Length: 171
Image (tube, rainbow, N blue to C red; front, side, top):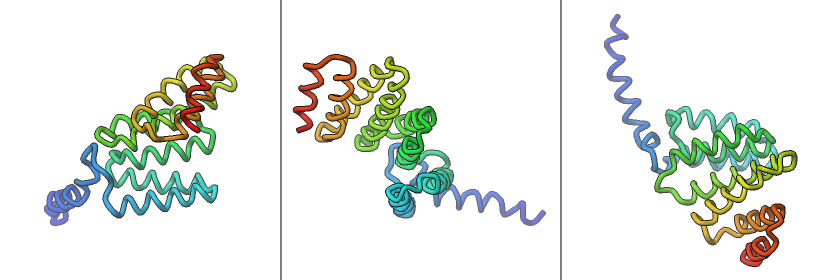
């Protein structure tokens, strides 16, 4: 019984300690950021599954509100070719990333890549890829990759003039 009396104090301490990671639209704290960097390192080594597990733990500690964790999770899922999960997770990141244009751009770019991969068997997905690449490029006009992806997608849609223009912007 005496432990139950401590529950409100423990809960309040937990809420105050995690508040900065929970507020939507805020960048992650240093510990979370360090965890994300480590997960990205794991992904570069090809260990997407371990990266995904660590990112899920970080996001859980942030009570499911770490937009940057979700973006990197969606990238790991993309690397693992689990496209529907990558699309859903990137969409969750977008819903949390208000005021964070780099995070939003990256999430839209991951969705574009997932749609592009799905278009190999369902060409109608190129239209979705185009929309996502355009959104990503609008959020980050300096991103060469987004213009390259948009150009390739437009070429796949047989819109050669637009595709070439996007590729020239990439160059």
